[in-house]
Structure formats: C-alpha cells, structure tokens
Length: 166
Ligand code: GDP
Ligand code: MG
Image (cartoon, rainbow, N blue to C red; front, side):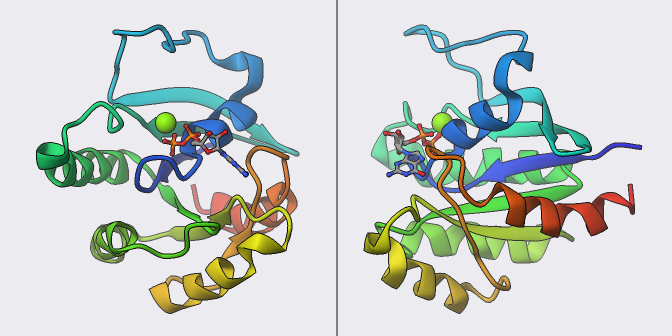
C-alpha cells in the first residue's frame, strides 16, 4: 500500500528543498540544468517507515507575472488530482500573502486531505507567520524547516494515520 503526496504552494516557499530532502538520492533524474524545465517532478520519498511518491510542482518560477496566476492554478490543480494527500507549504518568514490564499482556496475545493506546513520556521523570525497560518482554515500548521530538516516528525505524525487509508 502506498500513496502520493503533492507539495504545493506559491514559488519560493521551499517546495523543492523539501522534495529533495524527502527524496534524497532516490531521485532518478535531476533537472536543475538551465533550460530544462518540467512542470511536475516525481520521486520516491521516505519518512521513517512510510514510503510514498512525492510530487513537486516546479516550473512556476519561469512564468511571467502575467501568466503566473493561471499557470500556478493549472499546475496545482493537476498535482492535486494526481495526489492522495496535499502538503501545502507557506513561507512563515514572509507570512500569509494573497497568493497563498489562492492556493488555500484550490485545496479547500479540490483536495480531500490537506496538511499545512509553515516552512522556514527555524528561529523565532517565523513566529508571527506561523500564527497567520491558522487563519487559512486548514488546521494546525506544522512548524517546518525544509532546509534544516525540522518538522519531519510532525509530518510523519500527520501522514501515518492518513497513509493507512491508501
Ligand atoms: P520553491 O520555489 O517553493 O521550490 O522553493 P525552493 O525550494 O526553491 O526554495 C526557495 C528558497 O528558500 C531557497 O533559497 C531555499 O534555500 C530557501 N529555503 C527553503 N527552505 C527553507 C527553510 O526551511 N528555511 C530557510 N530559511 N530558507 C529555506
Ligand atoms: Mg521549486
């Protein structure tokens, strides 16, 4: 039994950093070279005894301002359809921005299982942003630092009861 987790959120919140941390060396194909852009990356992830497929929504950073909203929406909806569970990342240092609200709306409409994570939460510079996340109406945010590997225990705690359904 296994499941698919999509990491979603606006550009620059740390999705790829978390993806790389979860997938580690098990990512077969790395596409960091300039000019190589794919919209969705998939890898085999592991936290503790959980094994699952993880999807990173990439390719947004290259979009022009004009097309960004539309592309974000389209890619996120595609990832949500492919996924059993969505992990919604917010940049706790930046706080909740209007673009984050757009994602929250998509997730509330389209995803049965949403886990909310306030990323970049190492140190107390993120405290106010973490509190803002509660107002998204998606439950209690996990305090996470993808860069420092913090919050993975809490992610495991939220994932494991859901994982049993798949
Ligand atoms: P994406 O656009 O959502 O995929 O975001 P990236 O993973 O590319 O990260 C965007 C920037 O945020 C990079 O400079 C990362 O090093 C940084 N970043 C990611 N996670 C963290 C974190 O936990 N703490 C801090 N301080 N920076 C982070
Ligand atoms: Mg990325």
